[in-house]
Image (cartoon, rainbow, N blue to C red):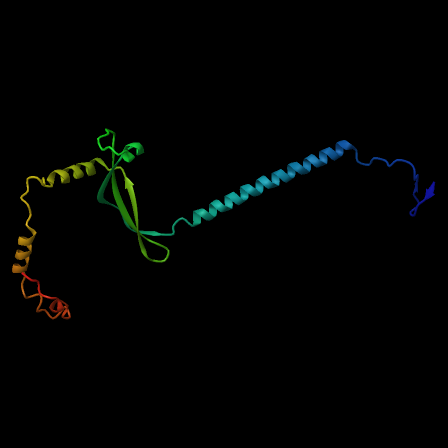
Length: 179
């Protein structure tokens, strides 16, 4: 036996006594893994909650200055293969869409127009059909004589506008129209 400082006697050649057996080591290791996983899941939930709260605060960036109004531009759409086909006589079910827009003020103070296409209401379809039937048929109209219209326009123009002083001489500086 050897004497060690502190008064303890040890056998140098004797095997060490197992202070921690294998089962205790396994339990401590599994507990550490479970706690690490639990901390990771809780931190992920907390970060997702914080990100969601931040997104909810940033929703109202632009203010609407004019709400959605129809522009009366219409479009008919159907399956892509019908639209891309060279022939125009392919029967298909078309869907009527109507364009509308609104004005919003962006973060810099400028106004921006947003455009969207949507299905029309029953009243809008009636209005589209009514406007279509109100337009006269081009085949029944007499041909329009552009030259005769220009002569009537220039003959009916008065000199009152060109002699006005409130336009800073811009109208007087324009060349006279040749009749």
